[in-house]
Amino acid sequence: MEDEVDRLVAAWRRERPDLDVEPLEVLSRVSRLARHLDRARRIAFSEVGLEPWEFDVLTALRRAGAPYQLSPGALLTQTLVTSGTMTNRIDRLAKKNLVERLPDPSDRRGVLVRLTAEGRDKADRSLAGLLIQERAILAELSRQQRGELADLLRQLTGPFDNTPG
Image (cartoon, rainbow, N blue to C red):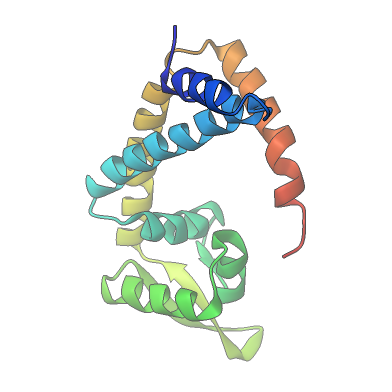
């Protein structure tokens, strides 16, 4: 079965036979898949009234386990945004009653961000919707193929995920 990337690669091989365009066969597909995943994420999150960035923050808190709270610094680490961006996001989520700020008992100057009951509900519902979308994307692959693909992608992303900065 030919896809758009096959056509793109064939055109580059015709136009630039001097270049090895093999990386496009993998990474152009990854890029196209990422766009489809982004669209699926937006659909899943819109069903519960969330933006993708809201999902990222709420689910970071949800994954923390009861009492579903983290320091702003821990949220920065998990969501890969700047301090100013995180402050803005926490403010916006607090206005929607999805998170609350609490004093950090171990640091008089610090705060903790805690998921509210409404925030937890939205995190749970949006994750369930996302998993439905993602299962549809992966439907063409067997369980074994999904495992193999996960292993290969882990091998590719590992160096990026384990490099400081």
